[in-house]
Image (tube, rainbow, N blue to C red; front, side, top):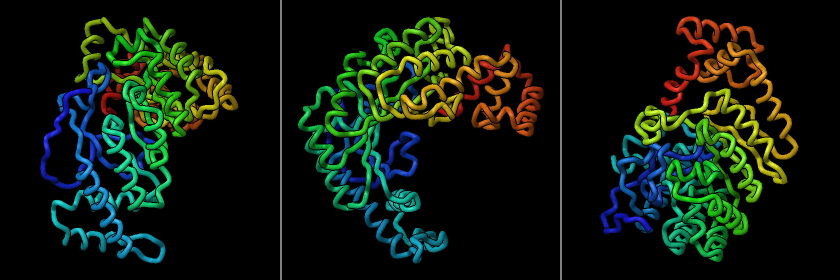
Length: 388
């Protein structure tokens, strides 16, 4: 287990970490650990320079109680429709102690979102003692008995070290979905990006989560193998997922911000980044190779070029592939027009190219900024860095 700051410190108020999955946009965020215990992946900028530490159970429970108090206050302010007047909330906030405002803000956002789910932060909450996590889960269910889902990120390396009985106990206590950054099923790719895990460990961990009765979201990163390992990345990742059969397969296209180690390898030429067209070919090979599973493929991130490559396997497989093949058959300038228009938010899906007004806007932008089939990938590299 990595070194962490376990010294007892006084409670300083409600905390929230920096990120959560897009699918947890309306979830209450409860911080169980700070930062990432691994923190060596060459493509990830999120926790670099930050030390991993665990929070005490007492502090996490204090956060939950603060949210509970905030929800009670908001319910008193709400009208018959269950909504609160912004002015009433502001007056209440004006009389709230500064140290309690963060909890009130989180409570308000959760209240407005329907209060159906909770996400445990940060990068690997399951690294704490099972008994501690179960105590936190039970307190969440005690304070908010109506919640439908409690989820968390977890590393495969951590999951395989947890006893199956403990995972099942966590599930019984309310933890019913795990998000795992699979990224790739290729051992070569995993080693190259310092993921700290192997394909076999990913498979064992995924199966273990499923056997415990929890839903499983596996994240795949198109482009992570670069040009040299693109085909292996697609085939080995599909093979790993075929052996796991997770509920969700979520696509997260590779972007390389200047601050990460992979950027230095990219700039030096040691890592050859795929173009969007090459990544479309890779994704098509990946989806075509998914077989014998009933997963839902999701493309729920702004970095993804094809928002509509979503659906349940196997029924929607051909429809998803048709989108990719349609793009690959386009002339290069038409591909570039869609790439640029999608990245700046003009297009949401490939069929938007048939909308004359949207197409005209994209053409005007490409003309003004000199975007062509020859330079579109370089332009997009800079745009994508803004979304990380």
